[in-house]
Length: 155
View (tube, one colour):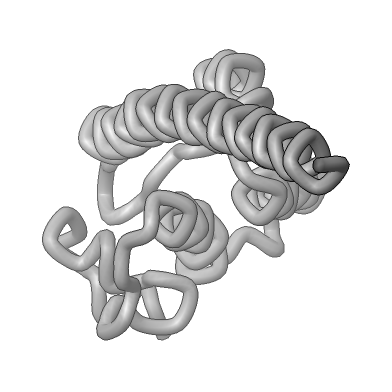
């Protein structure tokens, strides 16, 4: 007799816990889905911005990405809440490099510059669950189609 009420209570308790666990899992999935959707949009904006900067600043085989710092800051403000720590760290490395070459213009190295930039894109692709195999060290081959003097730059 005592076992029947206990069995009913345990069943109800188990069902309640199961419902709560399922509810929290669904909420987490929904949040992650929204974050991933936002990431895709922001990462696409970064790629678009980068390509536009490359297209508009190339002159005599030189690229002026330092001149686009303001636009990159605007992007940084928007994505900081959605990007993974790896993307944020790669972006920070890139900004540190931009500061360095701004202070030491004679040390500017276009190959290093592009590697820092493409490493951000590699981190973004990884963040979205994409495969980066075959894109080279730090994803340098991502830019290959856009740069006519690619082999000279990556030396």
